[in-house]
Length: 386
Ligand SMILES: Nc1ncnc2c1ncn2[C@@H]1O[C@H](COP(=O)(O)OP(=O)(O)O)[C@@H](O)[C@H]1O
Ligand code: SF4
Ligand SMILES: [Mg+2]
Image: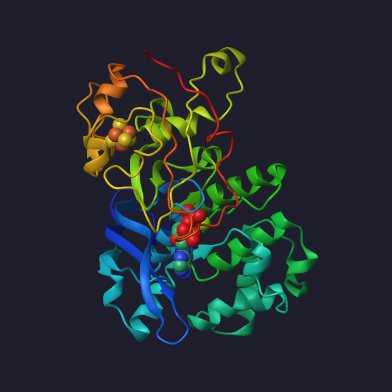
């Protein structure tokens, strides 16, 4: 993080990451001898998104909807089944060997659980030096030492931390080490996958604030993945809401929180309590029946139709809606929604109704059930209309 490095990244506006039609399908294998593929987990199933230089893109959705897989695909840690990721003008799938290694330096990841992502046998010094050495950033011992101290200072840890091991730190401090490790190689993009989910609520804000400070200081671009809408709201310029492997809504954070349009987003928001008691009393509460369907057997048509209180016959069951600009006065083109009936829902012409839970095949592609969305998103009531 030299002064030069602080300047080179800061050109807000142009696209740093261009995700084009990304799909990641995991084969489901069966059989001891032949290892037959009997199906696929459609973890990410057609995502287009752009992340601009210097911005924070927040990606939110229930556990199992494909956020981590998408984040990994963007960093080329998961080979996409289809589509491509253009990073800083280069299709990263076209890179091999040395070229790929060099590009990797510019894309780093911060993980949810710093304890399991940091090797317990390595000291902080060795953890931080590892990436720097791999990318040829360690010229001499003196410069390296100065750099290590600079990194620790940047993340708010004392220099004495260098000789310590991960278990000697608290959760929040460990996440600071994880962030320092990502910063060590002077990246352009940081994908932070649930960076505060494993931390105490009291520490979460500190780590989020640290990420924001570092972004300003070093002109970083962030993709922040979270199942918690509150975390994403605080830090993001734009937010994408994911459901079963695809984006259902995308907008500037303020626009999305002020007027969510997709029924799924509205249900998520309706589950987040508001501190103002008057607003809290009037807060819309929307019932989502049933669990997230299996990504190995996603519903046809609109993937949300099995749980959608606004579902309409019969287009919702048959046509998969694309993420589109809506024709509603005052809604900017940057606010896109994947719902056939977004206009009618926004105007109130269409009203929510009770949804019968549909049975989904429980055996295929079980998702990890931990860390569901904050609040009672799956068990609230909906207005019953005649
Ligand atoms: N390597 C893998 N092999 C098979 N299925 C996977 C693999 N990684 C993730 N999945 C499945 O893909 C779906 C999306 O997972 P993930 O991207 O981790 O979701 P999220 O981060 O939103 O919780 C889940 O059903 C998960 O079980
Ligand atoms: S397309 Fe239909 S099922 Fe899907 S969100 Fe819109 S109204 Fe609901
Ligand atoms: Mg995840």
